Length: 226
Image 1: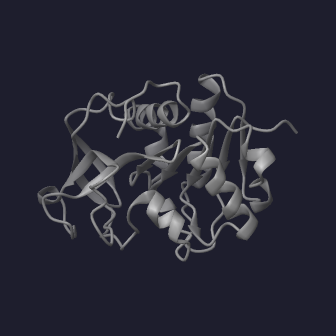
Image 2: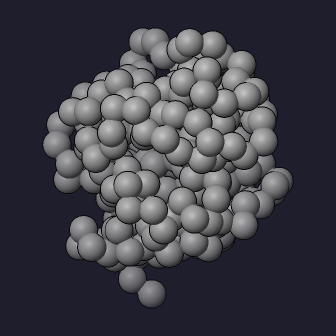
């Protein structure tokens, strides 16, 4: 099997989202449309220096719990620091809970969510490929993730936040980031908290959100820096 240009990783060691198959299919379609070969896997053995060295991007799609072994962690950290692209989606914020590097990479950790409900996403940066297709105020239904801390700060560029006044159960107040990007070493990292439901991956606006994120981390979408 050829080494994938985009590696979609869907391993779970905790809660498993029903939307993972739909998400993997959508991401494969988006990456394929951008000219990449794609491989989806749940095998931690995929995380080797040789394998990752051929990847334009690695995607963690709603991964939960400890999903990499020690050698995989070392290979992934080296890949990102050396210039690799990393796209983390939804429950990826709940992966690798005891690995400090991963927490630093995302800038925060998952801290629960209220029930699925409608709300509004406020876009802060429309000049980024990951948010360029989104309206300024985007009505959306999802699990509105809370986090242990606000990731906004040195090195993190928040691209969109939740308007907590439009739904129940937010815990971060007026500044509640949902989508952000950063650079880690020479690598690029993009996180979106959205993407709980199967239906999300059939929504054209959400697919454009993911396509833009993928283009940025794989360096085909312009040099917009955090």
